[in-house]
Length: 426
Ligand code: PMP
Image 1 (cartoon, rainbow, N blue to C red):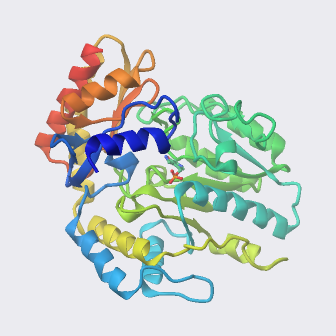
Image 2 (cartoon, rainbow, N blue to C red; image 1 turned 180 degrees about the vertical axis):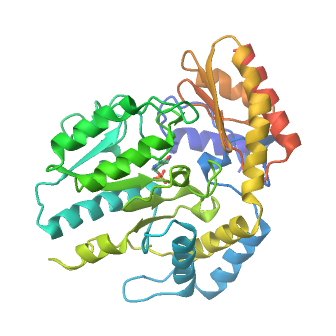
């Protein structure tokens, strides 16, 4: 198939994320990817600033993860998890229990991040059901959050920028409070927690859980907030018997400079969602972890089982990729790498502050965000990034990067220099 034929079929038959079927924006055909470089079929090479939406933390085509998957293929690619188990799943669960803070002992493997959010919400509801607190059926979250595109995940996404209006009256209405305003590094102000406190206090008998992304709100606006918010939240949730769910699908596995974003606050949730980087970005996979207490309560009352069990649960290929990815992370110098990326982002990305049209620049760990005053024109800006030899995929007003951890100083410098060049020209 020629590239023209490929693009023609793609345009006429294939949906891409959030695109029109009849008038899609341009897509760029990729031949291969290695390390931090994406090679297009026309031979052009792009330095990757996106880690394929936060997931490819070790870059592409990592020889060790490749080998782990090849070894596993020769044993079995998949085997049902109902009534059977295998060492890739057990080893992965052990690693997850070891690297997460104490108190998260039970692991439920899922197919994707959105599904892990659905599973977390079901766990919370089944827990309340088992305790006999059957009126506790609602969820509370903060505005500007993003938790995935499936039904209940969507119901706790931001009500304005999410899909609430589109699916109006069909989505479960959830409870929203303002986004935390105090920035990660600013001086904490107790009033930032007032609305959350009052809402929990006034509605505890209806609330099963609070769900949010700790420290970094990703796709809902790339916002970094103060760790004290989470410490207060954890205390209040405990006081009012409301479960706490952290969605670390985007932030887990080192991205923010801590292994998990919750570690910035020293807070442990009752239920934790992990995904994206769990397999080093090799394939769709996720996990929902919970405390022994939650798992015990769910299993103590009718129907005595947790009601979820997908066909590809615990897929051995995904588990073996994830085991290897976590080994590379833990045995390597991930913390030094992230600190170095953060230092370089602070040195170079801050230069964007003086560019016309830029309203804010924020950096945390290996995440660098340039917020523009107005939403960018994707058609124009995407083309310009590719022409400059970098892969950056903005959304709304945010032009941001979260590069693979293996990015070299030279590659990062190139990436940032080109990002600033492009936003200066648009
Ligand atoms: N939660 C968060 C915080 C996310 O960033 C995402 C994906 N962008 C999801 C959930 C959904 O994950 P997935 O796309 O794998 O379903």
